[in-house]
Amino acid sequence: MVKIKTSFFCQNCGAQSPKWLGKCPACGEWNTYVEEVIQKEDTGKGTWKQSSGSTKKASTPKKISEVNYEEQPRWVTGDAELDRVLGGGIVPGSLVLIGGEPGIGKSTLMLQIALILNGKTVLYVSGEESESQIKMRADRMSSKNPGCYVLSETNTQQIFQQIELLKPDFLIIDSIQTLSSQYVESAAGSVSQVRECTAELMKFAKETGTPVFLIGHITKDGSIAGPKVLEHMVDTVLQFEGDRHLTYRILRTSKNRFGSTHELGIYEMRAEGLRTVANPSEILLTQREEVLNGVAIGAMMEGNRPLLIEIQSLVSPATYGTPQRSSTGHDAKRLNMLLAVLEKRGGMRLGQHDVFLNVAGGLRVDDPGLDLAVCASLISSYEDTPVAEEICFAGEVGLGGEIRAVSRIENRIAEAEKLGFKKIVVSKYAVKGLDLKKFKIQILQVSKLEEMYKLIF
Image (cartoon, rainbow, N blue to C red; front, side):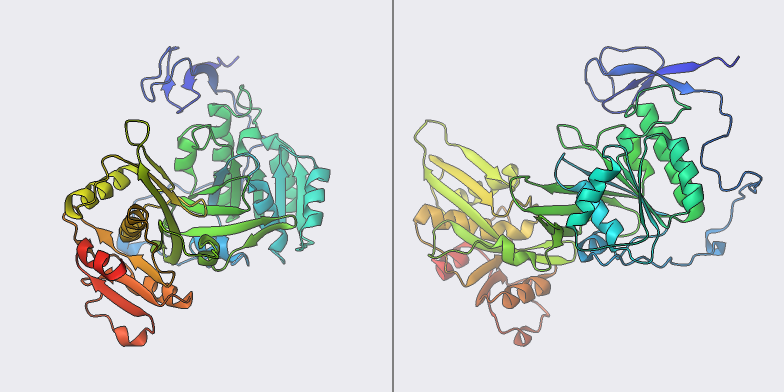
């Protein structure tokens, strides 16, 4: 009889210990260690195998110059936003993890992808919904794929048996926390189960070249639930974000072995599914009937995509003693830095004023190229003077009050011109070597905050 080995795992970060600990030394959380089985006799049945009688040749080291490399063709799904975020399409044999809050639309997005992959055999495995529930959602969508199969199962051995019979081109697991393997004696969603199930799916994806998408739950602080090793094992980690009370959803990547990690996809949630938003700048700019003070438009970059977003601010005298500093969608520390620059270099007395900053559209931004728009918005609210509607901004503000150059200024200018803006304020150091004659928009060049103030106000 084989002795069962056990160990203790932290349910928060996945750290391992041979004995129970009250406080995890890795993440500092209390009472998170749970005893789990880490080894059990493996009969070899039910787990994924490429072939039962195959033998694998031992690996030998090679010179890197002798390694044969051929860039694999990607699958273009037809969903422009997902293809952009993945780096141009789905890579065969890749393992992709998508996480998001409950009800944000992860299952809807994956089912929609399964239905638009015409000509591909797709297996959608759900451990959370019945087959009739999935069919009800699929009926609301316009796309139909005759090669889309649905399986409601949580046991990995049963799933791999169906995979061997069906031989799908594309596999979707909803969700990885619901799967369980009979070779690990712990509850579904535990550290051991999540790690074991992901390892089996990774082996299947790499040996067969089949792309696998995993839907993952998230914790209350927004990180993907389960051990951190889950994110290390997969090739790509996607985050599906947004406010459930608003219609727009944002798909961004935090890890991508096959492309950039700075891309962004925007969707609109409708009754019939998710609609891709081709020009997100239009939805991020509020349609106003009158010009308001405290509002400025900034040109930012998300990966290779230029976006024009609306910065809103409110500066008012403090009535409760200590002035408040609050920002939504923008880094609070950077806001404090810009307020200090405006007070020191611009002569604005903001020490006894409450300051509230908001990025319209629910985006979270960290592009320093929005500094100039933030400063213009703050000055507009402080002076109670609106910024003209046809002006936008692109520039970084330094501690000396200087306006610094930002990356991809040509793309930002082109996006502002496309959306009908008449003027754009940029750093004079950013347009060196740039042919300004090809732009119809008027480019205002400044080097200090004082120059921007005189131009706009």
